Image (cartoon, rainbow, N blue to C red; front, side, top):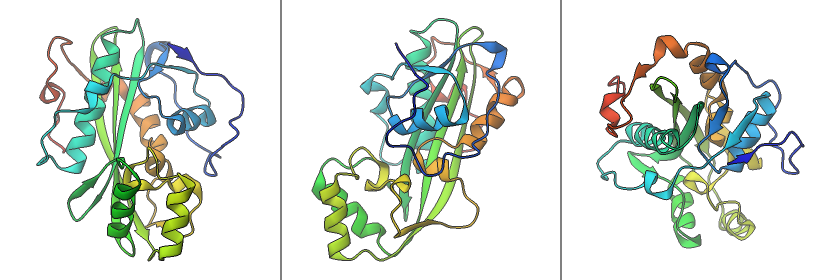
Length: 236
């Protein structure tokens, strides 16, 4: 398990100021079940102390294509948390999963450059949604809560030159929808008052609320039952 440090990142995000913070229930250690550097940056900027223990790759496979984007991220966040909570000691495990969605089509991380180009051409000049599923799981008593946050984005029309520059930069790699809001692209903006950190991969406002109200929001889930339905409140 890799422990986080407090040194500033050389690639700090431009939206780091004023992120909310809340105490971890029971004063337990917080474990981030993700190797995403962007999620770690957000947590550090908000003042959380945590360790990192990424979930196994098999936690992100096996769901059918008919699942909606909100349900997909909720289920993957649940499965990632379950994978780590089974292996960690006394802790609160935090897991998340993020996808973009346009016209009902789920856009996860692109497989390669051509896949990234196809995603961006689909999104060019259009509104779309980014969904992040968040799961908190307390290992000491099996209490778990899952929620999903949606942010609407508007992508301006992308010229061939801009698309090529973006693809050449490599900034599409490992990012849902083949873009990163934190990269400061002037062709991408949030519609309304949606969460910026949600687009980056972790809705910090909702996370703080979930931590504060954990005992009220959570339900006990049997670790021997890997079914998401055991924690489902049917809001997805």
